[in-house]
Length: 137
Length: 137
DNA sequence: TTAATAAATGCACTTCCGTTGCATGACTAC
DNA sequence: GTAGTCATGCAACGGAAGTGCATTTATTAA
Ligand SMILES: [Mn+2]
Ligand SMILES: [Mn+2]
Ligand SMILES: [Zn+2]
Ligand SMILES: [Zn+2]
Image 1: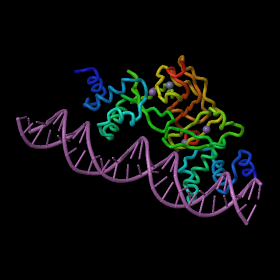
Image 2: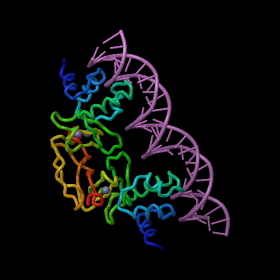
Image 3: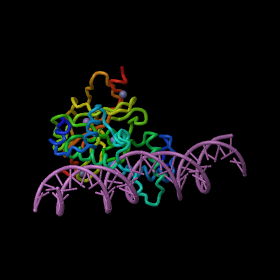
Image 4: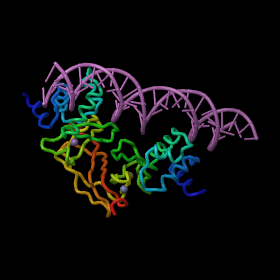
């Protein structure tokens, strides 16, 4: 049994053909993908199946949503060992204004924020827009 | 001439009846509003007019968009003196998981973020989700 | 004041994305 | 093998953003 297959099983996701393909696709770049991106990558596959595939991945902590402010939800692989399904990994996300790609900066956690009295933080999202390492220099 | 009227004119926006109403509506709470909220508040008015009204306000630095991760754009008044049309005011936004309202925390600026080499920040958005001061108590 | 011009409004229609219902096909457990 | 569960495919829906164009209202120039 190959590694992807056993990985999916370890996450309690049945390794169907489609799921293996989508998972592999997600691993091929560290760029967050929209459902549309995935649809384009698997033009023959059904939209709904892909939709439910990423939804399943999300529920099982295999991918996490990335809201980069473009208005379209993106998805990116969770880090190995991040318990995304239980407790969110609060790293920041970077959206390049040039190549328009969004990446997880998993090493960069969101700093501690001081809130006014009475406010209780439960979750947070920080998106930086600018020029990415490939497009600068 | 009343204050709202002259304020709009100072922003190079013609103070039409609709614009005065929408602007006044926005001032009545410090909560960010979706276009749908505004539509509900002025049920008799035309959707498109309201849409273009807030768009104009946005272009002229009267309101700014708030992307709080709900998938629907919200709008909130800019601070007096914030040159939102030129340079974005990088305060943080708070979305209450209880009352589902989003507020600008204009006093709380987004802290300095260290980015990896090669990344250049141009803009940023920080949204905290949790319990607001009205719902925590 | 009136005619010409520009701006704002209203209506219809479109597109995009996310989501759901339901029927069919595949796999699993017994 | 059968029953039950899970995955897939197709069709349709709904919300929200956005556009084209005709009409009304306001501004300006003659
Ligand atoms: Mn991420
Ligand atoms: Mn704000
Ligand atoms: Zn780039
Ligand atoms: Zn609240």
